[in-house]
Image 1: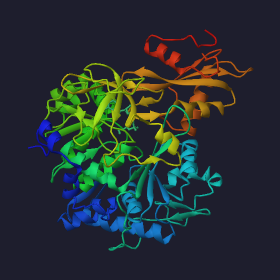
Image 2: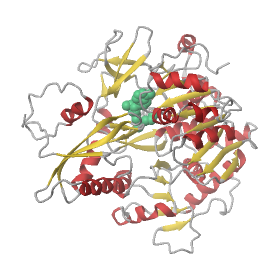
Image 3: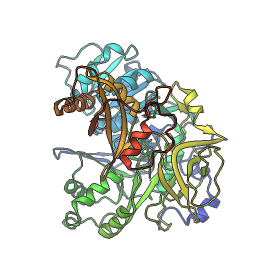
Length: 567
Ligand code: WT7
């Protein structure tokens, strides 16, 4: 029996108090996510249960029980506190998916810090924009990523400590750098957990928009109330589940459902710190008898490409429930998974800003392949008109997904950018920035984003960030960056570039520019294709019209071009 009953009944009877009660929380109480995910599980008799089963890319395995996790997160919290870091300080996690990343996250929360996870493939430029904005006080990293931090340390006056988790301290560490070994450090059985309350800031996740620099979505400890209950109702996590979330904690799925939700439910989590490979993934599921699996459409499409044979070679009968997030889950992917795993992937929709799943397919509800499902009980959602922001109230009419503020895990602001936060609200609705329609049965159907942000393999990249970085290349005069359709990643980055006089297009220059972006920003932001052009379409006021270039890539109507300068 799934944790959540029949959708219609739960919608009518649900209140967030159910989640509060299950967690033993009353309004006004102390609530610390770090405590709930680790120590609370000891009180509930889960001391010897594996909390984390970790496998590295060369096959090494590490296992930690909830007891060990509690001690190690204390140890990290104590170390950070001893360094003089204060509650409210932003502490960045810049690591591969190693155990220190997961325990570091909870350790930061235990000492009252604000955890700022950043994707370890980020280059120095991506790093600096986010650390500068957050005025980050410390960064926890690995030796292999240290050069990227050293590159920019001079420009970060707020950065006091660079903690290196895999250095023995005898290697030439520089000023501000300090070695910390999780397994060798003096173990702290007890730690005085910071008495955070519902509205105490917890996590800062950076997300890209169409314009300007990435924005820090700021979350609070009370988000746990949503993350816990959605992990129970949507992911259907039950007491003895073995769960695998394939997302990296550099992105919100990897924290809300790769750390908080599952551990607040006391589940064993498996982590594979290796790139995508169908054979490896199936072996991983078989080896650890994964029961609940949360992944993304790009990964599912990649598995489809590998074919059914790869699935048949393994015993995957442990799988019980599958969910997906991050991009539109096409109907074929749902049919395919039903066919080869005997289980459909359940699409879930949410954002960095929402902190937890807000629209989804539920275990007890029939899946309409290709639909995102229905609003989570306790979340009031609708689709509003593109111009008036009034609910369209008519099946099949496309508008913007809008949510009534008030669910516990909603972001509280954009870090030091309240104006942009306020601009997300219209007529009392939070506007997600995605277009969708609702059918006559109340199911939501995704149409597309309402801005120029590119969704590549479930990761958002901002065209502005890439265009700004391109301008730093000596040969680039101007550029426009758009998403181009891709059969696996849904979209990939394509750049249109006008060169400075004296430069001419060549394959060599193309590769040079691609590498330039890969190093500066990240492999995700690297253009997969560059088209050299003489000039870019602009409005009369000189703004580059990405819309025109994008429409061409997608074979769509260009629409109103009356304001084009060089039309
Ligand atoms: C954007 C949010 C929180 C999940 C990880 C991404 C797109 C998300 C779906 C879905 C179609 C989806 C939207 C959304 N998106 N889930 N099920 N179907 N699109 O978090 O980086 O903040 O991205 O991802 O465009 O706004 P994010």
